[in-house]
Image (cartoon, rainbow, N blue to C red):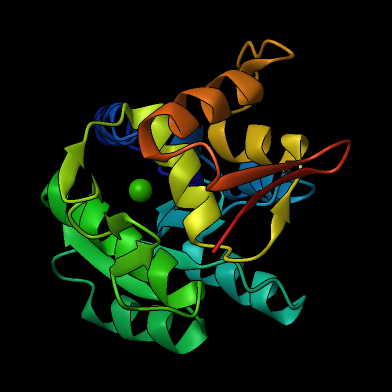
Length: 218
Ligand code: CA
């Protein structure tokens, strides 16, 4: 997923970013409301991770103005233990979930996946496509009953397809989903990962629509 992390605590922000990158996500990390507002314009984020007390404003105010503009990007707020009123205000303003600091990094990953599944319209983590079974919660894939080992990037790519069943995804959309700002992307990177994924889950599952993009079949 392509995530925007808005967190001004250096150590926490760096730890979250590293953990999310290791999990195969693309992260843009900003530390102010101003930078977040700039990043959101023009970048289709899958989920925002939003700290509330930021140097130039409050996360709730930022979320409120986003929702007023009709921006429905999923949002998980990061709050401190004693900020119960903030948690309530966040949920009432349109946040999808919250994490109370300090939180377990694996819990964060699970909450992200759960919010993403709800937005895809299918909260069930188990997906069967032909002989391939995908468990989005456990991040595991089986083909004809055999475990398939995917790298973090391969998983991230498969995740994009599974969360948009039947949709044709352009190469540009996949690049945006898989890579953060400033990442070096070779022109054939998406093709390379699609090809690797096909070898592992079966050649016919991801269809190439020449000049348009890719679509998950079935
Ligand atoms: Ca803060």
